[in-house]
Length: 441
Image (tube, rainbow, N blue to C red; front, side, top):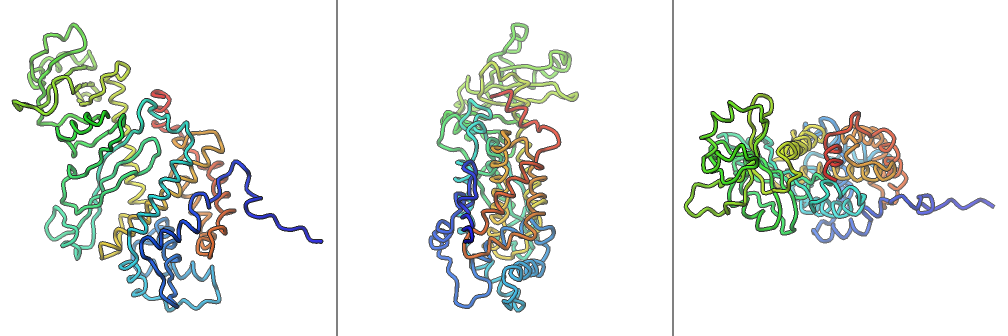
């Protein structure tokens, strides 16, 4: 009597999360129905196939270079899945039609679904990063050049060119994007509405978003921010920390330049200021703290509404420096996941490419989170780039499993990916993000 082969569920250990818990067949089908994505009869490039091929093509070097390269990638994957199926007639028109007509809202829906699952997967200890805050966000934007034919849709600041701007709200706790806005390149950053109603959040904000209205909005939401001081802002000093600096009260920052130049040895200053010169400023006199730090032969100034004593000027500086994580993300999404080379020439196709890359990014983050749990480490100790290379290398001959009629075919592959990243995905050196987490836990 032949022993019955164990089911996939039986082979998974109790402490492992199955891919069906991340994204099930029923959930994916429900998203297809919700966004009115249906297959036509006898279509060779059916929607499920097109969806996964777009996601995984984001991880392939130079795949975004031309439509023909994308088609070659599709043909190879389909041939792996079904060698007996004749698909060599797949045309540029067929792929272009999918890029135009498969709603990008489907891809955004999948991303939001995966984001909810990711929050559930994350270890509770990860959410203790900068523990006193509900969440900590870095806010910034980045421009991507497009085909100049799209100038009427995505206007650039440069005449005769086309570009789009990605404004993102990046969670430092989860190391991923929680809100995205895609606009024409010439649209100002200040139009990005990212402040959540949830209280006790921290926002590390790029100078391009500077506005008193934004600061008041964050304060009214009982949350916190850190920004660099804008160059043309000359705040009035209301209070100082340190009895030896009391003579600075009542003066504007520009009026103490000589004092700061002569007293660089003090290293830092801690002030309460009035930012606006308006007769009726929207911010109260005691709302804003200005900290200055003499670093690399230069005074650097930051405004915040954090007045807690343990957040010294040095800590405020180190905290704001973590905004660099969003720049690392932009580098990954544009250069590692190839968004720098968008090939679509329609708004729908462009949005679809953007969310394809974000979905792949988030899937890798989910694998990292599970690997972190398995090893008892923080997600911040793992390198995204190393993990991406490991996953991509393994997926080259396995990603066709995602094209099977059921995602259950992915289960063993998924667990192997977690094991591989757990063993070899750690960063070479402990990132500053992980060290900062220990300081503020």
